[in-house]
Image (cartoon, rainbow, N blue to C red; front, side, top):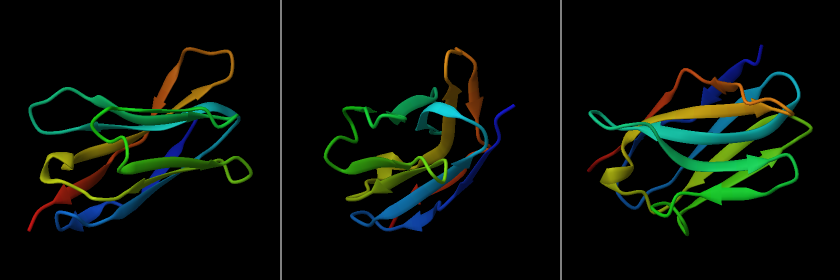
Length: 114
């Protein structure tokens, strides 16, 4: 069983920045972030593998940066130039090596509003 503990959400003005963190237990291949706005489906934000290969949604490219500290089993999402449309619950995601099972955190709210 993988446990994920998220932190770093909050309220920020448009154009501002936030950093999300997620600590995972166990040996993890892929870590990342998804988000879900009210009335919408959960969508990919960014993922990163243990070797550093990253993948971003087009909507966040150039504004968000995902990074990972393998020694701490922690993934970070640096979010810059935030827009109101980035408002959502952000969920940490993990997948172990040689497994298709997905694990999810409880979510952290990000609200971008003036």
